[in-house]
Image (cartoon, rainbow, N blue to C red):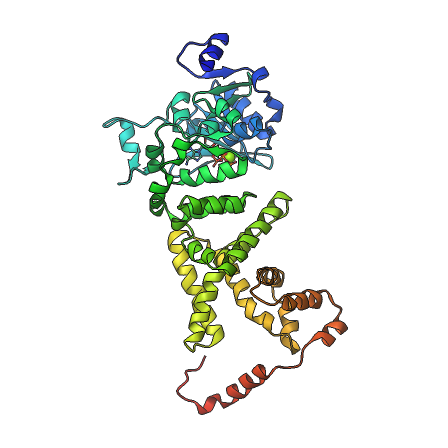
Length: 447
Ligand code: ATP
Ligand code: MG
């Protein structure tokens, strides 16, 4: 009713999108980044349609600062590229153009076509797997078709800089006003095409403080297992966005409620079932959120190390109990946990290297005597290792005085440090004696 009334007032027919002039939405071209404005101007000057679309329009309408600006155009990638001095054709799944303007990179994508029917040209360019997931897709279409291909109504709003109009095909503005996330089209079909949309729903709802519409939410639990068919590297990217969104605590809670964590961090179930593990993960996420929201840098390696720590810890303890030497047991436990994890969600090698360093440093904090403690201060990742220790202490896993000692030790001058060192413990001496005896024990292989 209201929509129809608005259409009449705006002189629109029943078909076609809402075209809202500036006084109805208050977004102005001055709010765009210089790069986004420039790209739209150049495309328009060459006779192409060009709109800002997606997260940027949504965020501006919500009075939030956009993270980046995406442009949608009717120009093909090959037509876009030569119009700019610094531009790259990228992407395999969808070909898009990255235009570099100053320090900014603006992503320019050509309108995507609606789902092609049977034997059209599109059917060859579009490949789906047996679950309905779209594997390859490079068919260009109209603005209307592009809007239908987007995930949520609030992400399918187009802003035209020249006219300052917002174009809305799917009632995204009304949904924004209701603070609702609603998927475009049939929810199940859209999740089958791309299961990552389920994660996006959770992340964006938490980030924007929106609720997920009942019909959009309904099939998620049932379809959660589809995430298993998504390449681990893509899941990693999506999970990273989620964890660094500033709303990781809320997101992880919701992922768990929806059963979505199983394909991502299957270990989360186990971890959160132990009181200590739950405390540890909750603290780590809360700390990360606080840092992100305060504009401070956070380390993804630290965060993943925290998420998986209690899994490493239990594998490590189990091996020790079976009589394996402590440090070797820890190494093997780290391998085990990372191998299992990376089958589902591929944490990059650079991150896993740092995670290992942080984990491997933890037993070294037990040594508060002699040169060892001083040497640990010099370790390249000491600060991260110490922060990790602090988290372990805060969750009650290690005594608070251990953390307090290291806090004081690192801040002390050299003389005070010397005075703080504890006398050599019996454990260290025993180990030395055993090592001296080693040649007499030929059964033990050399390290
Ligand atoms: P963010 O604030 O995290 O950048 P965003 O909505 O801008 O959120 P992007 O990943 O930058 O997310 O995507 C830009 C736009 O592309 C989205 O707003 C949406 O219109 C479309 N989009 C992104 N991912 C998908 C998807 N999996 N399925 C359909 N449309 C998508
Ligand atoms: Mg974006």
